[in-house]
Length: 340
Image (tube, helix red, strand yellow):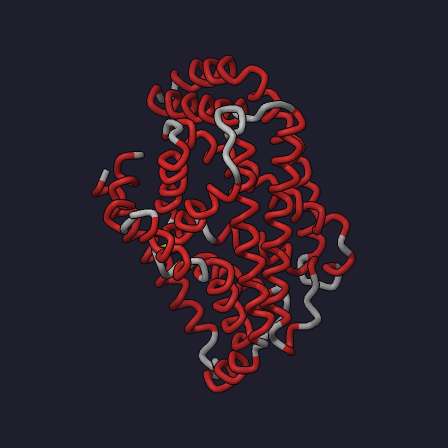
């Protein structure tokens, strides 16, 4: 397992270096003086507001988690705020594996079994993906602000496709909620002829998803979680637009551009190294240059600022709270090993 993780890290590093080299070749005329000038011109008050909206999302995430576990135990959102912030700070420091710290800390805080919190974490990710897909699909299908962009016809087509995917995912979620165990058994029987190991893994994931869904009390709780999820990503979108509008040269970008940019950032975040990120910044910068027609200098400056404000800004507060919660990098690494 350790050798596999090392190999994946090496491969991801090679991919990021290849992207960096391609960008270097493409932008040989990159003006560092212009880059630093643009960075200095950024409106600090808007950047602070962007960070503020990101911290609002942490409270919303804590509230959403409290809705998920209300059937198991009534916990105030304020009690889950600290583990949420600490969890996201370790995510920024350790990469995707740091995501597992949050359910562990919430399990320790609430006294609920870790397995139940891992199930909630799985369902939470589904709601996040569904919310992003819904916002982007709505943006691509209905927003007139994207009509002048290159590849608009292709974007509109994928907007319809994404809408269909969201609808299918919603129906599938309802089915899992009703007959999750039966679906898990059916999936295991169907896939076992090809790969018993894969079949077992798929069945376990379906059961975990079903278990997380059943943590919700009723349909009203499901609707509340869905609305809170949309609020979370709406606040993230507002944070994005605050960062972009901090630059005088980017005032023409509106919420329709932001939703598209946010989608590519989420997709790019799949390729991410601990502490340095990678794919998300590259995706954002490429969209700004290739699709929005911005200069490389302002794309790089605002792309890095988006990463700092929306992703890395939690680290100082998270580390302070981690000390209060008696969580260290070493103990977080141990948690990640235990949950694999």
